[in-house]
Length: 412
Ligand code: SAJ
Image 1 (cartoon, protein in one colour):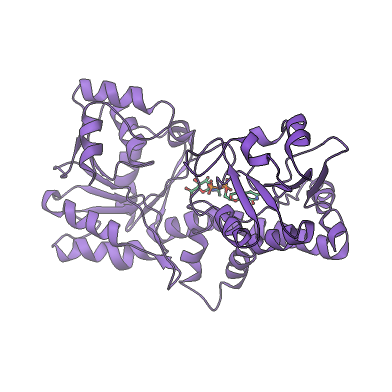
Image 2: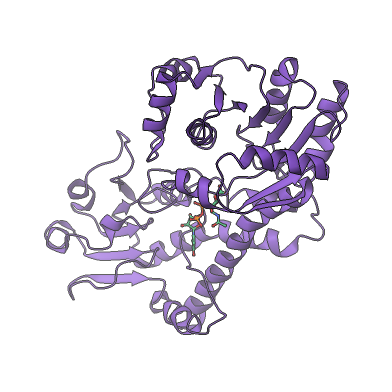
């Protein structure tokens, strides 16, 4: 099987690698000339275990080729970004549309077209299908179109692409069957055949489920701070119930998925999607909650910010709530930022961050922050107070005052 994959990013490149490993021929298309040159020399641009070796060998064996232009193939897979449009809460399909147009001269009867990019419900039927119909194809008869969202965890992408179950959303049942033959090349999990709109909504809903549950935990944290209860104890106790799984409150929700995908559903049914929108608003309100509590802890001075990644132990800071918190505190306090996972000339080492600081504000759950150098903190800080918004620090020496979401009520 020959596969042409449009977009060689975090999903497109690992997917290309797995097709190569399963003896398919792959053309990986991207708009970045530098990336294409590097890929054809076996040099990859993403940090993800296992991919580099596969791509290097595939280039040597001439089964993988990176290119600026698509080629004729049996299957075309689109893995380009779908950015969030702030104005109407929906997803920007322009990269997907451009990708569809770019493959059109190479598409032949009998081919399968798969969109993997996360898209709002109904996008395949209402926007993508007409593009191919206008070119004269009958979907389900002489061209097969499907939406097959990915669901992977950065750092484990190869493993999850192989083993996770996969939603195969065909525009017609024939389309789903054809798309499942494509993924059957390397996926060992179940291939669940369904309609395109079901696949679109399932993907968006997976992340919405998590966002809504986090909002519930965040709301509980606010309630507990107001009425004088330790929220962390409440969550620990309630989660002993076999069917309860309260999530963790924090400084807000970041990343490219949870903070965005719920809006794709909301935009389709704004009058009805009340809980989904309220959950987004609640999570978006958490940076203000953090800032308000910081103001109760110290009125002025220097704050050492620990961690700006949206997720612990990664260098990914997309949509991170830390930046809103920093911007808001920047007006009233001196700020020093430390994040061992992010290279930024404006960030400083831990020593410099805590030197003469009046407050350490933990905004991310990197492992490095779970056990800080308390001798250094006691020696360097002006005022040894820590506010841990991720609730990861379990114990500190008695000379250090630790605030987390469990004892914020002490401040009111
Ligand atoms: N967070 C909380 N409390 C929690 C859990 C998370 O505040 O109890 C925050 C995190 O700190 C972070 C944000 O939520 O800021 C998102 O983190 P995450 O680890 O929950 O999710 P993502 O965005 O890294 O990855 C999600 C995953 N989806 C689900 O778990 C349903 C992943 O499997 C998907 O592949 C990915 O979205 C995607 O690409 O859609």
